[in-house]
Length: 417
Image (cartoon, rainbow, N blue to C red; front, side, top):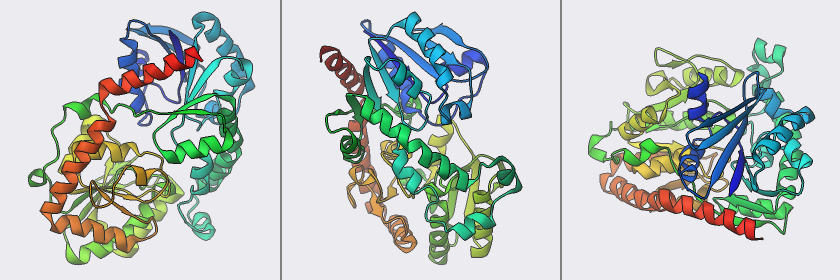
């Protein structure tokens, strides 16, 4: 069986071989690709956009194709990519083509050139929904006030990004309508896809975490730093909800003056965010206005080991997004056993059973978020209960062997159709 993956990222093995950097998204592809490639009946090729030259290279059991281009090549539809897809098709001739994500358009030219291929789509986020929530509730006057000179010059601010995302919704719909099979992780993504393609056959398939999360020790309340909250990348784009968290910090500080919220950021200096966009400028102004400078800490984006260290030190982990499908951050935190709190948006309600393995709150309710966090701070019995149940839930989701077998079964059923 020969399967071609079309992905949005440069996977680590290929990045290392080429001496290039890899991103922090799409981490769930890493372990699954490695495990699948070890199956004797299976041949895997992975295609992505990266660099200046076309690359065809074999690394261990996986064949990699790099099509020349960058982020803009992926974001804006380029019909000229067809010649590269034709070359890949001639060289590898896959039985199944598996599209991972609808966020970018580079796979559209393959869809149109080879309409009769057996195709399966794994949806990650839903662009139509994320574009609707792109500003995270921020009003237009705030967006205009905090635009940077660079954003004016390059037309790449929060306003333009939403416009581009809205334009790309038509390509997302084309992906969904052009495939007969799809995999996903929540009823939220299932029902959205089937609303566009009623004949779509949907498979519920969980993914594997990064290898480091399987070998990591579990969270223990006795080992964490009290009143420390891991807030991940929530201050990087408005949709992730960082600005909605800041008022909660001020409320919590009244009872817990030593509370510390830890955010990941693209650029950090001496524990404080370096503004690289209009949104990060707004975040910094809000921190000053609320007088919570001593209660926030920024850390540059981390690899898996770094994320695990940050999580295990934390008393609570939060995912305050305006929209999410099946947050990788939440799943990683639950797998480690950190008491977790997430906004009741998208598919998140299917991951957390409120009060059993975590807490849910409404995205706009900063007071409710603050209350839930303080509830965990003040009650170790509750924290241990949430931790134990989260681990049991997440370990079922991320059974490495079962997830590989499930995906192989999907491929077999597609071939047999």
